[in-house]
Image (cartoon, rainbow, N blue to C red; front, side):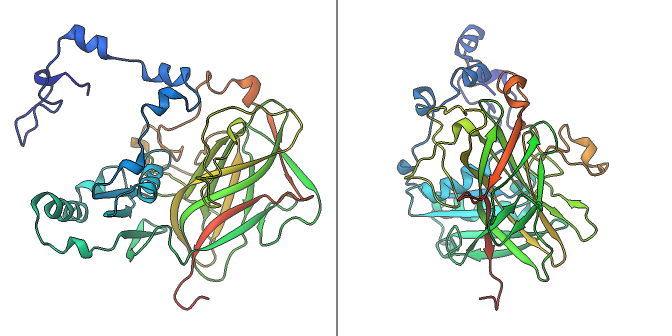
Length: 381
C-alpha cells in the first residue's frame, strides 16, 4: 500500500480510519513518488551508498522491543529477528521463536496474549509482571509440527556445543574427522548437487541456533552460487519437511552464498555467523580453489533416534521431491522451501556463468565442514 493513498484506500473495520494513513495525494503525486524497486536493486548489486542510506543502524535501537521469529521463515524474516536481537543496543529486549505459517501465530491466543502483555506494560504502564519475562522464549521444534515451549536467558544459548561435521567427499558422509588425504568431487550446478549424510544416532539430538558451512570450491567459470540445505529424513529414508512461513515443505535450514561475494567482515563474523559485507566482487579464476564460508539461517530441530540428517550442496534452489498434500497444492510455491524467495532471475544468474561445474575440495590443509549448534540434554556432558 503506497503512502499517500489515504482516503482512497479501504477503511479499518475497527477504527474506521484509512488503512493507508491520513494523507491523500493526487494521482500525479503518487506516480512521481513511485520507484521500480527490482530495477533499483539490479542497479546496486553491492552494498553501496544507495543501500547504506536504507540500512538500519542497530546501535541506535535503544527502545524496548519484542521480536518474534519463525523457524520456518527461511529466506524471509528470521535473519533480521536474530541479528536484530543480538546487535541492537537496547537493554530491554526479548526474543520469541515459533513455527507454523506466516500469520497464524500472530493471531493465535498464544501470540495475542504475548503481544498484549508487552504493550500493556510499556504503553499503558501496567505492572503485569512483564519485566520478569525471560529474555528468550523458544518453541523447540520436533517432527510432526510438534513444539515444546522452553525459556532461556541468552542467545545463542551459552551451553551450545558447537560441533563440526566434516565433509567426507569420498563416501558422501558427515564425519567427526577431517579428510586424511587430498580429494575432490564435482557436481553440475543445475543438477541435484551432492548429498552428505550423518549416520543415524542412537539417541535424539537437539539442534538450536545459528549454523555455518565452510567449503573449498573451484569452478570452471568465473563464479559459482552455493546453495546449502540441511534436511531431515525418517527411518524409512523419506524426507520430512515443515510448515514454513510461506511454503508447506520447508527443510530445516538453508544457506546461500555467491562465491565472488566470499569476502568476510572480520569484526562482525563469528564461527557460527560468517558475515559478508557485499562491498566488492572477487571473481574466480577457473580451476583455482577458494574458501567460502556460508551462513546458514538459524533454525531448530530435535532429531529423533534412528532418524538422519542430510546436507545438500547444490547450485540452485531446494526442491521438495515428495508427494504434495491437498493442503500444499493450495500454495503458489509449495516445494521450494522458501516460498517465493527464489533465485531464478536470468539477469542475476546468466547460464553462461552459473550453469557450470563446481568442485568441492578436501585434504592438504583444507577442512570443509558443517558447524551445528548441538544443545545437550539433561544428563549429557
